[in-house]
Image (cartoon, rainbow, N blue to C red; front, side, top):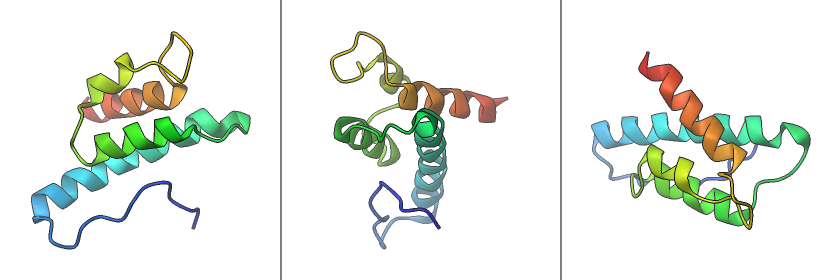
Length: 90
């Protein structure tokens, strides 16, 4: 199994929060996979922001508004995560 960029879930999470975090992590892992197809590893800031999303500290829409490093556009990982989230909603 590939290495996860994300931290393990706390053992004391309520079942509904654990389910929600697992779902968000699947979206984030999808986003990273799509974004790294070119062979570029994700920047530490991207991992940090995706972890905050998984933890429920920021919302999915916030990711799409975040700049990618010093670029004016959001990270491809953020956009792919957002796309995966939207696909699940329909």
